[in-house]
Image (cartoon, rainbow, N blue to C red):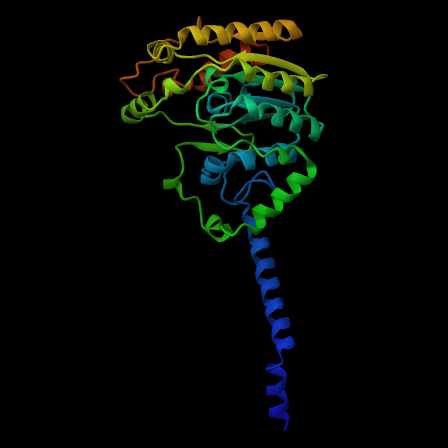
Length: 332
């Protein structure tokens, strides 16, 4: 009789449902705890176990930086933001910024476009700690170059960031993300907790590929995109903002000229200069006239350049010195 009663209870649908629900809750809780401990998205603490000394190879940052970096900015609450494209996250090391700038975060994003600037400005305002912003612009940001999916505007709000944090814990790919660095699936280099990526030299093959695959034909200048920069600057009123046109190698300027875009590049430079003057903002056009013309696109990385597009931190230190933010004076 007792056995029959036990079997009857185990066959009870409500009992099974309760047991199943408890198992699911336990599994989800365990997975969440493991995710929080390992922190594969690097959004909960400075030094998760897969990093060393605040740096590590992260395939997630390589491919999901538009999710991860806004969450890192909100957690770290820096006083200074360095905003720009991959040129910024590879070339400007926050350790080269003057201590007077406070905590610095490198908000460089791969192929950042002008339309994403207002979202980053709104994020800086929302977290409340940012008092100084350097916006380093590249020509392609204001062109018809095919853009990546933009930064989610919800990440500029506290509620949107909470939702995103939950998604990093309950992501269906969490188990895969917990397995390890997967170094072979990352781009070369080590990410730092402050958003900078220390990048090794590129070989001749990679340098050539980067030069050949640039879609200059799509880089049609769109002056209307200046409105995105204007909107970002409106949001950043009351903060110290510096606008920089990033250094460009002679090889890259030649690619643009050969593609029939030299006059558009010059028009873009004039338009940004006029905008900065109209708003009374510090402005530095470093596209040319810099002392770093050692790059040969037929060879591997040079002393100053990773490839035609990306300058090295040595150039970055000079840039920071030129705009008054460097630990060392310009040219030192």
